[in-house]
Length: 256
Image (tube, rainbow, N blue to C red; front, side):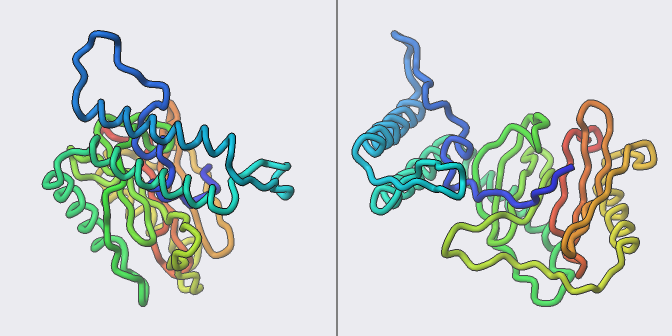
């Protein structure tokens, strides 16, 4: 079961965000696409900066995590800023046209309007493009992108407009805390029925009674999990106040 519901905001994890290999090169004599050429220039820029930082930068030893050597001071600021700059540009180079992404953002907004904002004072989410992704919780997908808002991270099939994964995301240092309603408003049984109803509304063509059940709860949050063959997994998570905090469809794509 997925115990950790929080995802790192993709903007600051360059390789994971943009889906490129730092060792990728173009065969000698091949005619290179201008976008790919620019990606390789940016990639080399980041590699050179990292190499310089490793040789000349400031570090400290994190004794609380096994003595890990981490960037410090101006080196940490420089590398983080460069990762963000490079990641943002490569993400845009690899992205679909903005007008097409706008349609997917509209689909995420429609999902939010239907399934979020069920609890008092939940902020309206402003959805932004995060990059291309190739899987949902390790299960491969064919046409998916990541999006994020101030409180959530999403994976969306852009061909169908269906949200396949949504979860409260981790925040960077300096960002406001995420919103989560832990008011003891619903019982576990009520939340489980809400999860069952939610799955039914996704029209996945799946009979939950045929799947293995493994539900869990932790500090006012409840996670309802169903598992099928071949690693297929459905999860719906609610905070006790009734706020949707996670949904995962890993592999149940037939009904979409």
